[in-house]
Image (tube, rainbow, N blue to C red; front, side):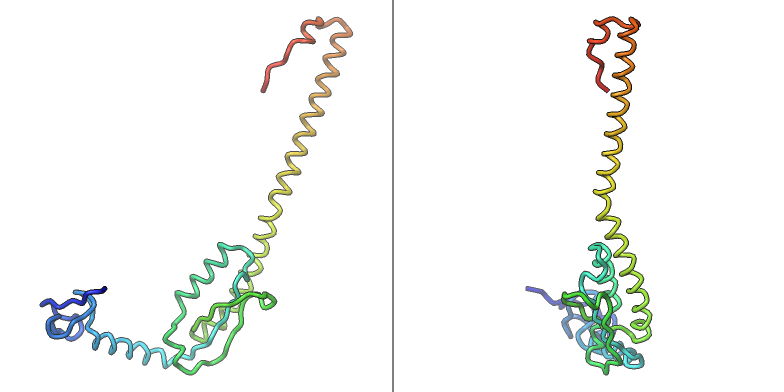
Length: 182
């Protein structure tokens, strides 16, 4: 259970002590000052036009990028604006996705600019996903090339040993000697 401050320290807004009017914390505003501050914020917001922006989940084809975009949008969204008249609604992200979307309330001029940014992020996310998915295939191809190269070197070395044995340049003991491992 949360305890309210009831001490002597004055409210930073109106100067009344915690004994006169309790507040959430020692350094916090009293409920009346908090309401006034919220009204001032809403008054400031009313001068702007706000849009409702929906961004579908998994639009960016790469989980870290999806998370980063949604966290950014959460930070710039003004949820208090949902009680204001909304000018425009934007559905951004992968419009063909059959997933849910998050709703954000963003100043209209920002929402218009977001469309281009989100399209670019979707394109980059798709390329990242493709590159990420191709890594195992490319690694397997490189390993196969190296195996083939080692095999070819081994065959060439073996032939050379047989030629040396035939000419008498090495003995049968040298030929049968176990080579050292790499």
